[in-house]
Image (cartoon, chains in turn yellow, red):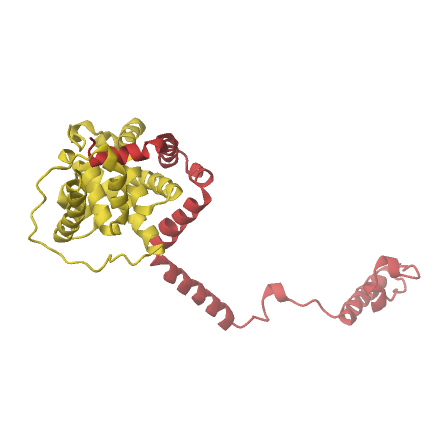
Length: 184
Length: 138
């Protein structure tokens, strides 16, 4: 089952024309993944709901700025990410957000996200692992696993360069692989 | 066994009902009438929208507006108050009024061949309730 929505099935053009039912379909498709993404970043249920609502309103208001309809999903997550960054900066913790090495030469990790399987008894450990990751690494991992966005789109959504995204994803997946390998 | 996506979505599925409400509210706000934006948004969200979308978004406009108002205030303070303005025309003094009236009475009396009645200035100024004797004008 493909993780990303089939772009032909997403009614972005009718939404652009102001079709309310098209917007409803788009938001229904993304509301839970978007909320999951925001909730794991900000760690505050009410704030996450507020951010999702703001994101939807801003998506309607600023859809004219989206040049490529195929990038609607990553664009939407990018709007939410901006709000999460603002909230995170207010509650700033020194989790090494700005102290990281960039590895432009990293090749993308081999296994696609839907082939990584976690045992039931490791689900809690997986969620705890997400929580321990630095904000920036968590962002990239969530975008990768929730929607399997191409790395270039993740870089655009998070307003970072491709090398930084690769580095953060590599770090996050390394931690996850360690968790999986520890399974008996 | 589940994929990471399934685990994440399953963890947050309990929020689905609230998300449905938010979706409906956001659509009504974004596609509906303008006033809905102001009385349906929670206060914190409204404040954030006002700050981000009205104030921060118009950053260049605020110094320009401030400069215009400072200019208007400066012009107002620098301009001397005109004593010849029609709105500030002073009323003639009471003595001048009574003199004028007396003159008019005299002219009228001359025309009618009657003795003129002098009108004192204090009787002009007193309110009706303060008069002690009636004024008789022939």
